[in-house]
Image 1 (spheres, rainbow, N blue to C red):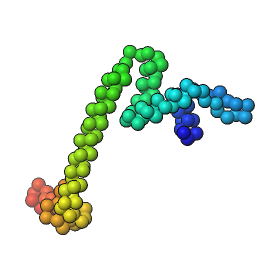
Image 2 (cartoon, rainbow, N blue to C red; image 1 turned 180 degrees about the horizontal axis):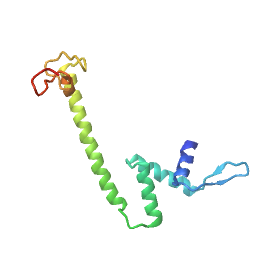
Image 3 (cartoon, rainbow, N blue to C red; image 1 turned 60 degrees about the vertical axis):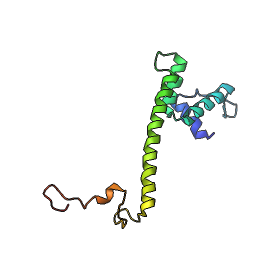
Image 4 (cartoon, rainbow, N blue to C red; image 1 turned 90 degrees about the horizontal axis):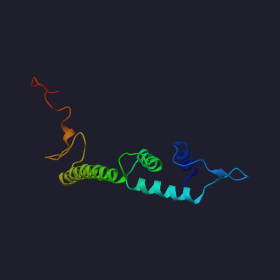
Length: 130
């Protein structure tokens, strides 16, 4: 792990400041290594560092706040929404490829699926071109 990442985690309060050797090198105990693995695993599951910090704080202090299960359920819903957005983007890109679009502003395909191609060509409410 990058030393700047470790220092950042220390500044954020995710990690306690470690003991130092006589030469001034940081000495991380095994429980810190395990905590780093937990932090990285949570990030791989889509939790932001702020969310990870809150989960760790909740676990350390036993606050009566939302538990990991509920947060995981909420994260699943967030991921599902992002997947739906990505699928919509993919569908539009496939339409662009299939329509053989060749330009964002001067596309020559008959049924260009990119909706912003009409920007500047729409008529204003009085019927005059924009």
